[in-house]
Figure 1: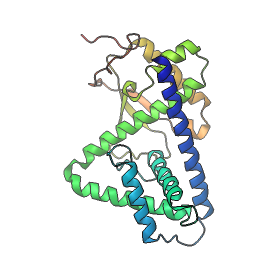
Figure 2: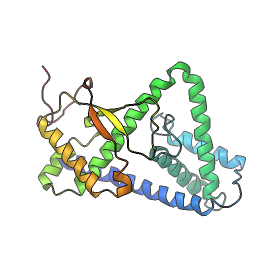
Figure 3: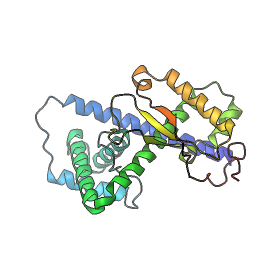
Length: 251
């Protein structure tokens, strides 16, 4: 079972790496044309983007995170996926990379506007939940990267793989209501501790966080958030079938 979990994690990391490479290629493509005239998007291109998006995310999972900006990493991954699929389906000569990218980002804006109108007074609550989810996802990615590059034994890495999921990541809250995601400055956030987490897991998490901060490029490490411990712990229950070394029973 552990072997299958490792293989699944490797496949997920490989896919993430491929998606990041797509982002870099598409951003280079956009940068190369940034000084050129305004990009005109044919109606047929916009329609193709909508159709591909509908097929890729028809079950309602994945897709754009409408509570974040269109330029955040999570949404850039979706844009890159759309660009790749549209150009694969219709050919690379029919529309330029910039045209498909612009159509995808225009569609993001229309989806977000529609969601705001539908949600009405519940939008802020959804936005807050989405930010928490994205922060836990980024924290998980940092720790996975640190684990791969750490000097931990292979046995310890295999053990850590059991808890390298988003369910074991603690939640973060903004210290100010107007904090912008992706802002180019260091942030201080309130950390909600997991009351069921054993000290061994807490210690390993700190080790991975320290490892990432030391080895990350300066431009990345400077933007890592700082934390203060919240007086109110997380109310989230432990994941089902969590390993006993990582989770202690709650009285």
